[in-house]
Length: 189
Image 1 (cartoon, rainbow, N blue to C red):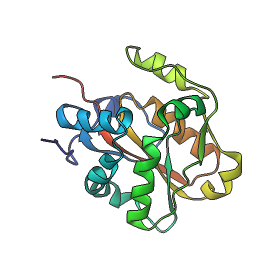
Image 2: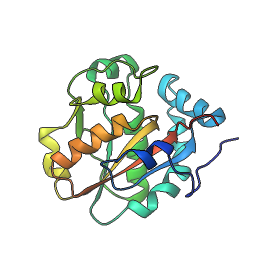
Image 3: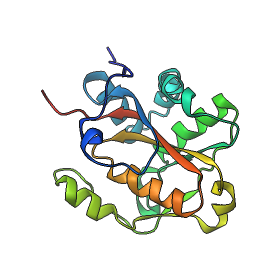
């Protein structure tokens, strides 16, 4: 069973750490079947998970969508993209954009340098590792300027990647940024 998020399910770190995005939502918790779905999407070539997750993600996204909305995925570095063969965040963003009949700027951001995996490091180390790692794709800046960007990723752990992506969108001239993820990691009680 997948535990969907409620409006009252607030990220503990988000209550303590200022975030550069306006609003953020996750469709499910990253545990049990939610974790299984993310891992299948990310590492098992199960792109059908993006279709399965669409109703949950549209439910948490609908309040953010306006007339000037564009969907932008968190990018992979090209070396990781070659290994994985696809960007799972791009599949989620594309499905959301199609559902809401809004543009998806799938290459709106770029990962300018590879980053090591973030597993097993502190919150401060995560933010330090992501600093300057994401930037707007210079060719796509006009598609971000003045827009309401919905930044999409598969999972949020600390928010470091989403913060870096948000900063890149705002630097490119986005009017505002909201974030939506399939799953959010929760601390064990």
